[in-house]
Image (tube, rainbow over all chains, first blue to last red; front, top):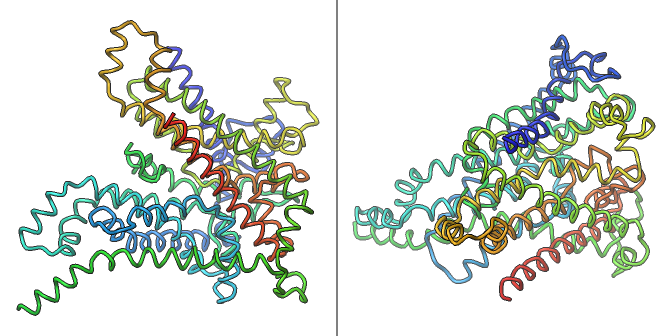
Length: 266
Length: 301
């Protein structure tokens, strides 16, 4: 009983900040800035159309969708075959090369984005979705390789052998036999890629801060020292987070695996 | 027919390199390329703020400046260290305790675990915003209740106070990432074999003995992993602090990542900024190496 009470406390602490954000996005300015916190109020829908239509924040949603979608497609397209090679082929230096993919997880984004900014401005790609897609694909590609290697290794090798007996080439085995079996893993990896790119802030802030800026970059844009419109910025934050929470419920099964780079098959 | 088979067999042998090359190529071009460029720039005076500083070679001047003449860098190095070690150890202890609680006392965990995922899955910028809203000095919900309980001075705002702000920022990180430790440790606990534990209970071992002599040693690889991952991510921290405080007040919450951002994209001092970025990279690399060694060493003794 005490344990359950403790868990309830933990959940309240975990969820209240988010609940408060959602509530703020439906509060009038007066309610949001009240001296005494207001928990019950008449909700208003004014902030959503104001920020997304009048302030023209709708393109940011589109940018986020295009960037996250493209990054996911690109990372899977390039990374899944690579992961298959790591899982099924042997060659000298394989584990060293595999480790190279992990080092990209260690690299601090600020140290990556500084030279990327210099290079991209040199080739005229600053403030473009392409720059952001390329930048995000660096961390997502290694995530795909790490996660998918594990998923491929979960498939018994007998399946490959049976397929080759049936006359499939190695490439054919990959395309017609292994990919369908690994499909649930690919789906989970795709969702995680999408989330990581959708949530990403620093690369987006530096590489795409005007025309092609994403939702996350739009959030601090509304927080100013001279008066923040809390209802509107909360509305943007809710739109930026709600789809992610829905996604989280979808793939929670594989999330621990993804968040530990495939090290734990939770 | 035979020619076709031969062609497909040659093609087949090439599957490995063919499938792997794009990934390696992309990473080399997008990570190694800029990395080398950064090191080159770090030896120059490149600046977008001053027209005459267009990339003249400086030798090791930037590095000398960083090591000897930049107290702000070292201040932010210190801040980063406090932040990293503070949040990782707190998150580890709290997360481990919560994992044990869930493991031993709760049977139907699924819904709880899903809800616990929310803080770490939503955008860190949104996390920062949420807490900025709750900690606001005038109408913040949490500020109000802390003051009502007499825990916070009416004149003080947690994010505006030099003594408290770093701890506050760390607390937000603890809120966001403790569930991660819980989930990983819980996955570890669930993967442990049951028999030795049952045998130990039969032999009359006390719970804390079992925990110390069996659970902890068996979980060691997972503990090391979760600490390493959290350590790396804490070093990388930028988003939340950027929106919560922007590094202020003064330099009190200016982590290395924020300082490097400021040098590069506020002062546009890109040559020196590249030096900074390179040093941050080195710090993380050294941290990882030391941690690996520590784990390896403690395992071999």
